[in-house]
Image (cartoon, rainbow, N blue to C red):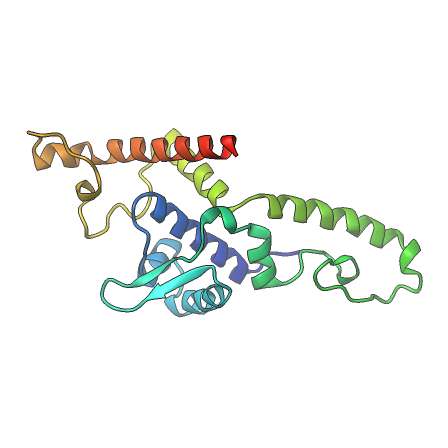
Length: 201
């Protein structure tokens, strides 16, 4: 299995949508995603067309339109997205669960190479099918906080303070100065709540 550029960009775009959603921006324009990932807009549009057809993203036209996730992040598994974009995870087709094809080996049942590739496929699929978009977004935001790095998409035209609670008597300037710090607390609290819900389940 080799992740193609198309597959890589699809996963990165989904992670961006997930991060933006957690920060209070459920919809992003294609130009914002292309700018952040330094990708041609047309190429990214082609990828989103494929993701939309599979039900991973939704789109809305208009000035305030763009793309958003079409299903909960906990229901988007990386293995499934890679299979959609790049095909089977198996390194050779004769060990694929989703796209089996007989190889040229005259004795498949006793082929040492096939036995080895079964193990390779099982390790790859186990990891990629285990992790969801929710897992990776949480890990990414945690690293932003740990490294004290401002997450992307906070430069958008709508003021950050419009999505954060403000105390009575605080000025707009004071709220702006505390915006990023408050946002990290919001994201932290959301992640803790999500972790608690998963633990209860």
